Length: 397
Image (cartoon, rainbow, N blue to C red):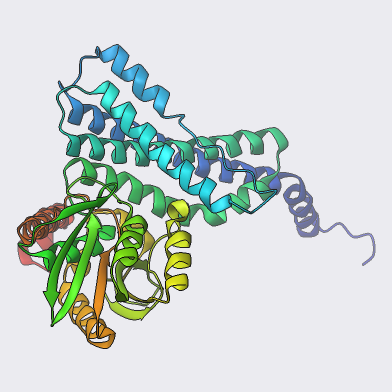
């Protein structure tokens, strides 16, 4: 009947109007709470990573604790100004120069704050610092967005960041896991290329061919092969592009074979090996641009052999399935050499943390990875045992 009082309808309309006014505020509060928790988590990771670095340096310094803390705090804000892109000609050279200067600056910083530390540990500390800076910068960016959302009350900004947060979180956790790996000379997933190269080098003598890069020459399946890798066991990427250019300029090379870690699609198995063409190398420093341009001009074909893994697995201690890929890599390389019918270059691309330049060093690296996973599996089993219920502990599952 018209005009009849309906309490339920009134309550319904009150809820609708309340939702219009309070739901956005509730969403802003929820998003801010989530981002605050992540920012705190990343700040804790930064702090723990700094403590690991300071522990590694320990007494290998002449600085006081106050001076050391001040130096580490200062380097956390280290940044690179991107090159101007108004005119793209020469951009690759600018990127390469900035990348080299960036790495050199960190190396010099570590040399300045340490005393009596060997070059390998200095390089590993520099790599650990670089990834710690990465974690710190992410935490600062998230803090920036938190303050921006609070100021503008615009939860759309927060929602966009919330969508990306799972991907950001994986990368930050991988950076965090890489710091102790570098400091302890433990190979990460990206070390699979240099690890294979070291295995292939065997007992052959190596020589320095470019900055932070070594080469060994030997016969493989009847073909002359030049094996390249970054100089280990420091956390070093080397200058593979320069090394390739030097060899190709002097020798008649039929093919360049690159072995590298590569991102996998969801559903693909970690450690699976794939064969293709092209120079398998990350875009860092524009080295790939220079070496590809050079090889095209020289008419040298390039094969790529990749080991698939998640992008975060490339930064974390080497997964067991990646380590198991070595025989499959060797088979793929041997097939590629057979097709070449001439001299070849085999380049193990990637960071060579914990991986030296011989088969013996490669075996030591493998054992280090195996020990790590053995400890990790034991820790997981212990945690599972502690988390079991009373009856499960007595009678089992």
